[in-house]
Image (cartoon, rainbow, N blue to C red; front, side, top):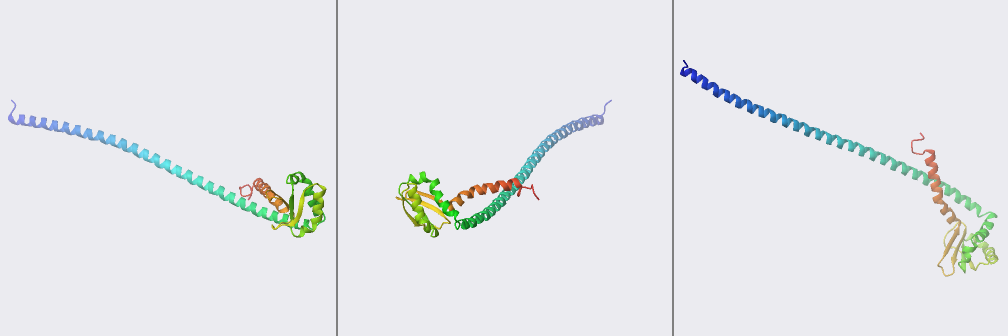
Length: 213
């Protein structure tokens, strides 16, 4: 026979079982939620790590690229400076040789040859004036005779206001055309050529490129 006490115990057990089931269900739900949140957190951390590594890698690459760029710029600067120094030294030597040359007998022949080589160009000007440096005014008669022999219309030979090492400057009578056959012009025309020649020579020799110690 089931007593009242037995009924109370049975009722209590059912309530406890229901609460336990509810508790277990709630715990299971929380555990599942935590698993999902942990999985999402893990994915988030992996994304953050990937972004950080990518950012770090880009930073390293950028820094390396900047260093290489700076190294190339410094190398080019030093190369250009070396080239300028060598050009200046070379031009200094050329000018010194030129000053010696204008004092030789060959210089007079050189002046005559300027008119022979450029006769057609000078003839196209019509009447013109020849300008020389102060020392070369002593060649005035020779230059006038040379122009006459080549059928060139040279009106006069004058001292140039521009300081030149030697050679001549031709100015058309109406002052619209100027031909510069001065030695200074010849030297300056060769500056770019000499610069490229020296640059190529330094490159080939491995200057500042790590080919030499």
